[in-house]
Length: 221
Image (cartoon, rainbow, N blue to C red; front, side, top):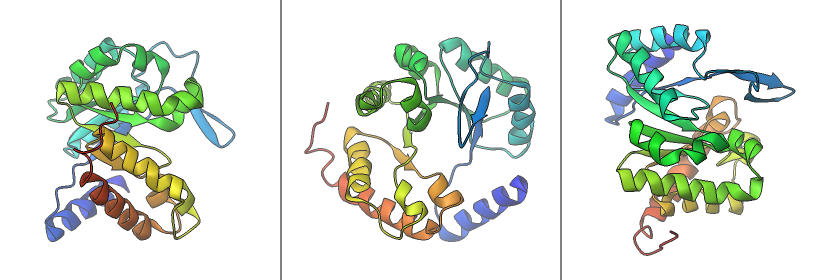
């Protein structure tokens, strides 16, 4: 029950004195192939009928952000914002960057969005995997220039789905995102279905806090 989960999260945030915005992630025209999903190549627009039904629920729950998957252009962001406004919602519009089309239009998309999430999993299927770190740097840089919040997501602590400790490469990956200037790093499967959700959050917090000490001294851009 998503409504119950949202209530529980907000209650826990209030109890602990933490600010925890709720981000609704609209799935877009996604198709499943084996154990992975990707953009439907036949899709003509990124906001689906399912997304609109889900958005109705999100606005009812007063979510703080609505994040649209597979954003590729400014018009996609404009459509998302229009749908939020049509429902008299106050949620901010977030662009999920996870395909080459978004990278090609990144400056305009960042300008049109209230915030950006970098989904590296799908992005790594749409561009050569060796280009992903540099795409990450580009997206974070454009967001910093525009003073828009940016979240780096996907596979940050993937090994902790099964293991209580991260790999050294994963620790470096988190630190890289923070030193670039990411405002947040986000876990997904690690806390949704992984065996060590609390440990993953603890490690993430430790690495991010340590990396912030060096953020001003290490210039990666």
